[in-house]
Length: 611
Image: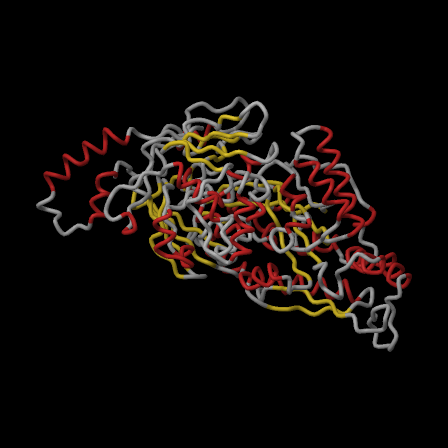
């Protein structure tokens, strides 16, 4: 699959001739509306509406800021990164998105040159003063620089820092001097060669750069729009993608409409042999995308209403079927006859995703590197009843995690089993006893070795599913004499507290953004503390191995390094490693073209609705 763009110059001239004849009739139209007509060549059907539900509310549509997959799903359809993934190819394959071709890479692996395709335009906006605004190389340079601007406070800086010549130093200068970040300075590692050419020069070879740049966080942001809205840019995403934001009621409803000036995007008519994609190509192959004119998203946090809405036909896709309904939907692993008769489609996958509970290493109760502190975390991990989570709460829709790296990602070993992750309350109690965590006052709960109270606190959302997990945690900790309480709050608020290091424990999951394991090891890298490193672990031997792995291409040597790093994690226990998820997705019979990509959460641009 390769996204082709139309010849903008010829069509734009033709559009201007047509507009000249129509000016008398449309004199009241704004400059932006005229520009929209001039660029409008797309034929997404406005009567086709895709209805979708989010389980958790979105946070922001600023690509430098968001950290949740729900915000990412929206941004992915508004802002364009330079690279993307072939929708159908398995194994996955990076392809140009807004580029003429894949980047040119120097022989020493230090210089990348990106050629932005001509004739791609941002959706009209007053910031462009009524003129068509072409996507250019400077937009990608600006979007990268935003990560380094201390005023932006990007928690995603780890995706690009310590790579590009001159940018980390500029970030530190701005922090030190307290002056505005200089977006117009000449940086040796980020050079706009001409209107459509961008050159990135690296400090050292980086074999993860392209995977990172393909993430939705690197969608192009227009400087005019960002400067117009300032800190509120996350409420006003303006891009070159297949959709634009039409309406947003925070935490409740999002409406996207097809971008009328979107470039030409089609799937090829040939499927790889044995891929099983023939039906998808019959449905959408060769058609100009997107086909759906409107996407309506509602936030439905409770599982029961979300399931019933799909069952009643009010939602078109139920992505991530709640585990509590799996036996109703797929007894014995096959779609139930009553759903099959309705033509509902089922897609199941072992996701490249890891669920975990992190410990804050800066917390005085569960943090630290001393033997008794490590012993407490390992005892908590062994005490937590993972088999019951999988059997009862997840209804068998998961496999035990033996480390951070999930299936489908380099260095994942399906045969590896760690004794430190075995559910074993007896061993947990023995470990706690050995290191002085005993019940001194006879209340049934253990104190710390110095006699001070021992109180665990787990951040948890207020929905029914989270309450079930709370109860499992309570039973598991009671079984070994540990007291635990639950801090209730909103996901977005917990993200801010986690970044500030004020949460003790939090149950989360990460989905892989690429097949490269570098991301997963970066979640424990000391300099990423307060960013992607939620546990705030700072372990010198681990950091040295991670830095060494960064300079290696995919190879047995790098894979072995990742496995050695995983062993260190099992020793120091920054996470309770829970599960790798098995996800089931349901689609109504009128939804065509559905295929879940392992590294992209949303696929709306490739879908059609045929009733």
